[in-house]
Image (cartoon, rainbow, N blue to C red; front, side, top):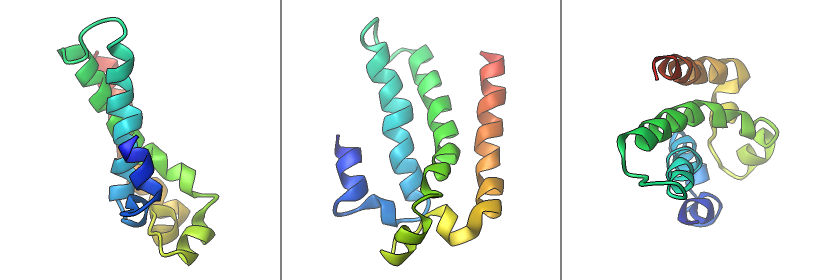
Length: 109
């Protein structure tokens, strides 16, 4: 809840370039996996933590797509996202390693 509220309300983490990607990836990746795992077992064992880390890495790159439709509004309100700072093509190049890393890590598990 803290991540969700502070993403949009002061101190408004959404306005900080790169921090906004990490800020949204942590609850959706790591915390979401650990919370789900806690229903069935201990969330602080190796397996859920590794899955959570891999998901968080994926989401750091993947969450840039959510800002495409908001690019103009974000720019007008002083929010610095990868889309309105670097454009679609450069953002895709920045996001690609996170997606690629994620894909190859799951192949080894």
